[in-house]
Length: 374
Ligand code: UD1
Image (cartoon, rainbow, N blue to C red; front, side, top):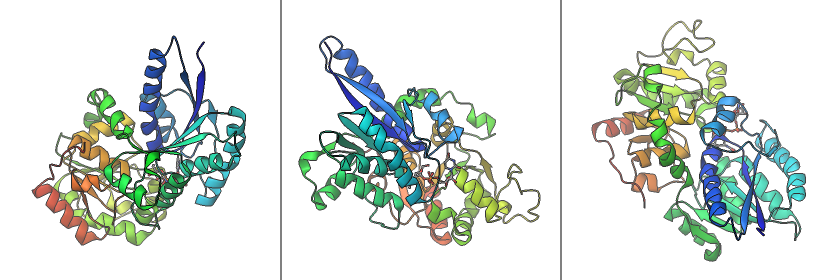
């Protein structure tokens, strides 16, 4: 008879969905091989509801062949403290009731830390083994909420699955037992490679009237970049030359969309889909930055793969562009994924306009070829 090991797998935000999809595939394969004699793995998908809009959440489940979550905590948005506390409050009874042998958390979002903390504080024998996928990444920038989430999650996890060599060094420096650290590769890139053939069939280029290699793709969602008018404008001004050279497609995170309206920045964009675009009389500059809503996973891969350049403040996009061999400019002062700059196609531009322009010029004149980290 098969004995089942119950494993709770937690997701909350958009990149989490992409990172857990290969785990479900691996579990299905494992169970198929062990069908006759066991033990099998019984995964229970828990969605905290940190991301909840259809294009930020539901749409990803269908594309990634993920099961419908068995548990939905529906926490929604809030301050960091509110969101983290609410996830903990709602997750604790679930964890107690499920009596799982293991808990898997991924990445560095508030859901990751909240659920790991709940598990770590459960008394034994209820406390499950805690596994952190994408452990050990460090930007060394304590002002980033994600850096706090990563560091604390690692410190309470039993198994640390790392994606790049720098993570092994970071964890060693923090005194974490090397026996708990396992270099397993990058599940976000496993997803990218698995779904790339389907993404190749996307019609996004036609829909957005773009030519392969004839446009840039832009994503910005970090509070540090979009919450203050001055910071956001600094980046938009840094993009001016690029926008005058080729169209820039800018899929908007809901927070970024709201900020554009609140900060009255519509004048930087060419399209009229933004709510107050009609009222913004003068254009800030002559370049072409077109906004759209959040994209589906397959459309986004297609648009990254065909872009001349990607400009981003996302962690995952730095890795995906490296895997696809597309030059990337990251508008941050640091990265927790240094391998994308040492081996990959990524350059760190910082967040000041002159430095952003300089990095973009460099990538256009002499694109970083990079190689895929082993
Ligand atoms: C979160 C992660 C970040 C990750 C990003 C991926 C944390 C601390 N940050 O940032 O590391 O890179 O997800 O996208 O966990 N909102 C909506 N609809 C949604 C989700 C969010 O409108 O479905 C809006 C809300 O106004 C919310 C804001 O976006 O307050 C920010 O969402 P939140 O989940 O707090 O952080 P992200 O910026 O998405």
